[in-house]
Length: 320
Image (cartoon, rainbow, N blue to C red):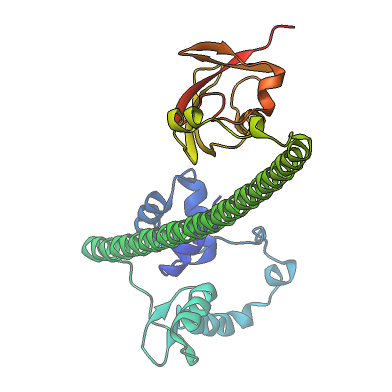
């Protein structure tokens, strides 16, 4: 038996005991069947919560003397004038049972009641239909209010869900931005370290070149043979820079400008730092004219090797 159905019937004006009885008789199928039964049996007595007491005439009454008959007749007259209902002195409504009185007092706040010899008349068919209509309207109104409340609750839940989703998306975007910023700082640091490493390599190469030049100058013989011929000066053009296209073993190309006086070892070091193909020993070569550079060539300037003002250098995997 649903407590919700009982409370709804009580709110409509039925007593608790009758509401429970109506739901039990109608098989607990809901408020409407129970309400129809209650209207059809509105004149029934209130269900008793105590077992009936068997009536038996006491022996004292059977042995009562005949001269008491007059008194008994008087008692019977007074019995016919006994209270048949309870009346609300404020609104004038009649009630059969104390439960109805208590319920009316609770709902209306009225607190003045008295016994009445006026009998509460049973409802006519029109009154029953009208009361059924009113109760049905109340039931529809309660259902409508419940549906509105459910819609409002669903709206609030959806609103909270959307707000939570937005907050999660905002937190996720912030985390992604922080990760991206961290990644960019890491790349910037790596590039700076690479740049510094390349500068150190260049400085070391320049120092080695200066040391070799100083050694060569100290060992150069003094005389006419040491002076370059005029024909050499005429046939060789002086280039300060050369641009090299370096083809790796995986088909990719590196393009870099070098000083024409830099040695081929500088190019080799650049390839070792920036290559994207398989790491391992390699040789350098040219196609036009075809030449594979030897270990001695790596200490030779690029202009002397004929790699100015531009040239294509091919990386070839070294076969051991």
